[in-house]
Length: 335
Image (tube, rainbow, N blue to C red; front, side, top):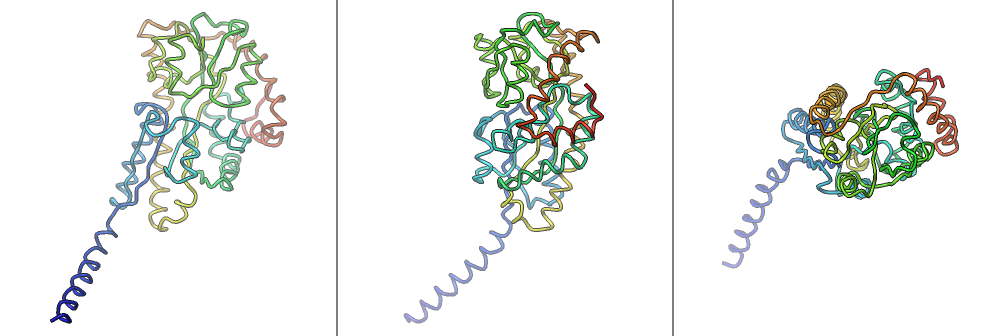
């Protein structure tokens, strides 16, 4: 009888294992995609687009969980979380890679190095952009794509028409030695601060102003706490979509190919909506009646450029002269 019971138990255990096998195999691969901006920004919308296409193309074998607006991690925390495997995918601004030790990415922060999206895409869609992404791999990070956000404008509670108007102002920046140098060139006081804390800092006067693409400015409701904005287009803010390298390499080859297709489609979508969103949000800022928006004349823009372009040479020893010259050559930069 004991033998019969043992045999029955053995059959039961074996049956449980056999039944559990397919159930476990059907569990989707989870990709946690964390970012620090609002869900209705270009990056937020592109992340949702990637989620949709990744799940469709893999027929549910992959599930993408998107966490916007610093729900999981703030600016300084998210890269470490990715390297540790706590999240699988991020789309940090390009300035974030300088503190990580890949200072070449700070070339994207140089003021007036790009004269619009056409110039920019010669880099992000060309060999220089791919060479930069490859520099992330020793850090355990695989770079998948570049997503646009937009070109930045200055805002403050006093009018901004000349570089001198920013003298002595406390201006929020993300962590970047290039952006620090840029603000010091304007004789402003750079204040490094997580993006999630900017609205309150502006509201309470901890900082006087900041620089943002219009979509970030509007979706964070900064028009409520900034009386003036000047459309300088002095710098670019974009993102690199990155993934934990170990996680990526261990994916089944067919899944990885499908995710690459989803990412290509999401990138085309992201870059299309970035300009559209900034244009639409600019009209919304104007319509709010709370922030006076100023466009620079050619002469005023030239005055800002004269003050800020020398930052290129000052940062050559940090970023690498070869990297700066490669980007300048790709876009046909002239001082």
